[in-house]
Each structure stands twice: as C-alpha cells, then as structure tokens.
Amino acid sequence: MKSMIVSFSARKGGNCEALAEEIQSRIPGSDTLWFADLNVQLCARCAYECIYKGVCKYRDDDLYDFYEKTRAYDKVFYIVPMYSGNPSSLFFLSQERGQGYWSENEEYYPEFTRKLYIVGIGNTNEQTSFSYPFLNLLEHSKGKMLILEPHRYGLGSLDTPLLKKRAVYDDLHRFLDVCLQH
Ligand SMILES: Cc1cc2nc3c(=O)[nH]c(=O)nc-3n(C[C@H](O)[C@H](O)[C@H](O)COP(=O)(O)O)c2cc1C
Image (cartoon, rainbow, N blue to C red; front, side, top):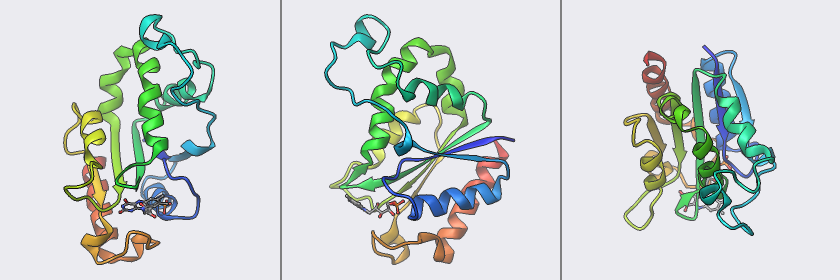
C-alpha cells in the first residue's frame, strides 16, 4: 500500500511533522509532502478563468501537479493545523485553487475523497469553525477525520509534541487501524 502524507503546517519540526513521521512508521513506504514547499499562487488577480474558461490562469504552478501526484497513492493523509480558529491558509489554498483542478478532473473526485483521511490539530469550540471546511470536503467520506484537540488531552494549544501524551498516541493509532481496514 502506498500512502501520501501532506502537511499543511507553516513550519517543520512541530506536531504535524511528528504526526507525519508516526503515520510513516505505521505505513512503511509512505511519502510526506510539505504543501508549504510548493509554489502555489493565491486565488487573486484573475477573472475567474477556472469557472468561465475551465482552466485556471495559474494552471502551470505546482497545484495541478500536487493533485495529479495523489493519483499514484492508495491513501492520502492530510495533516492540518488550526491557526486562529480555522484550518491553516495553506489548507484553504489547496481547496480554493482545487476549483480549477477539479473542473478539469471531475471523474477523479469520488476516488480522491474515498482515499482521503484527515488529521486536524486544534481546539474546537462554538466560536470557531475548524470543522466546516473538513466536513465539506468529506461530504462523501464520512468518519475519516480525526481532530486532535490539545485541551481535551490536558495540553496547551502550542504544546509540542502532542504525541508525547499516551492518549494522543492511542487515538492516532486507533484512527489508523480504521484507515487501514478500508
Ligand atoms: C498563528 C497561529 C495561530 C494559532 N491558532 C490556534 C487556534 O486558534 N487554536 C488552537 O487550538 N491552536 C492554535 N495554534 C496552535 C497550532 O495549532 C499548533 O501549534 C499546532 O501544533 C501547529 O502545528 P505545527 O506544530 O506542525 O506547527 C495557532 C498557531 C499559530 C502559529
């Protein structure tokens, strides 16, 4: 089985990297990709070419290749940190620029969502909307998301590594058990 792990963290050496390494040790042969290392333009300074012409103005940057790469994998794990109450802007960037990719590759979307699993890091509460973008993305893939909320484990939101806490480690591995059964 080949899995692709994608970190949407702004930094290396933090919780997302530790989680990526843990997943990699559980699923040998996995590849990890840092979305922050890609050259992906913001949705800006365009005329909605993705919608009106079916091809994004920035189609030649790294976004299209990123989604194309996922085709070679059986599973894709997104690791997404919360920044200021929402998934990181790198995650949002992958979603909004995905509009252009998916308008050209609609037939692949059901397969992509089927093999996608998400681990989110952050404290959720009624004031924040962390889960909404994930729920949208997983419309066709219910139950394939793990949100690690530091407060639920008695940890601070900036604590690292979360995995030092046995309960975090156990929840991650229970989640991976389910992922590996699919
Ligand atoms: C700008 C910024 C905003 C953050 N906002 C939140 C937040 O609203 N809620 C939360 O639980 N954690 C928040 N955090 C903490 C991160 O989610 C946490 O540090 C997480 O471990 C980030 O992943 P990393 O360790 O791979 O960088 C924030 C961190 C940064 C840098």
